[in-house]
Image (cartoon, rainbow, N blue to C red; front, side):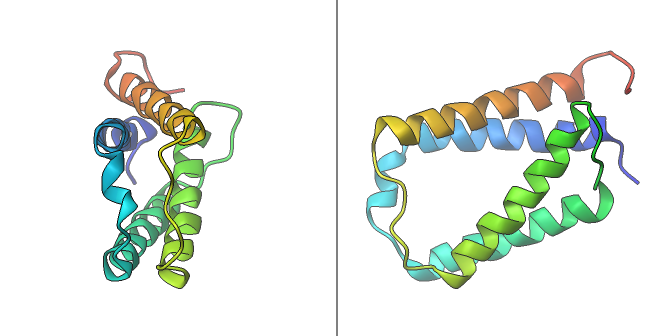
Length: 120
């Protein structure tokens, strides 16, 4: 089983890069291609299931964030699979707030994954 630190080393940088690229390229979501949205949903769903299968930990520590990322991947993936034609996020302050929050989660997990602190 992968440790929380090892998963954080994978998930943290991935979320960080994803959110930064979404901030820079938010305009690409103006055109929704349902097949691409569906494929994205399959990938999100698979990633979420993979995380939950190996890391379904509910504690009062930072490790719960990894589990939550898995569950949000499952939920977001299912939404995109069943509603691929749904309107995507608009270029608004709310969208940037959500993306910034996700960026902070990515940076936090990256820090936890690569820090020298022992795993709790």
